[in-house]
Length: 105
Image 1 (spheres, helix red, strand yellow):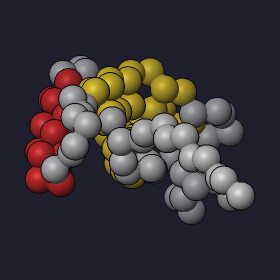
Image 2 (cartoon, one colour):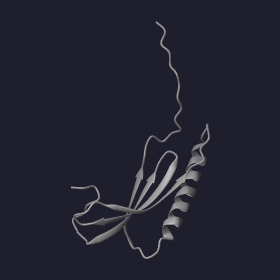
Image 3 (cartoon, helix red, strand yellow):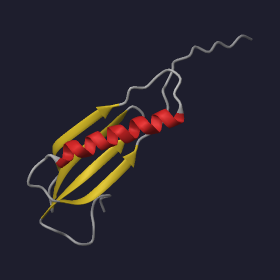
Image 4 (tube, one colour):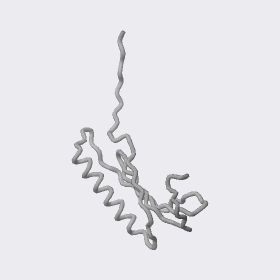
């Protein structure tokens, strides 16, 4: 059973898939048809302007603005009826940094 499947089968169904990651918010319109591979026909990505030292309040504000921009952009796609919305929070939720660790014995 697929994660996106349901007990009620419809002919065609459009879903909005939102991915909120560490440095991007992406919205994709995807067509699901019974017996076929899902087809992404529209996608929009908003990058977050992250800093070295990130404050949680600023990060939430950045994510909220990026999500709003993504949803407004998706809203401008004409002649669609979104049946479902899936939202994913990708990890890791941090700004990565490379460090060299030396072990002296």
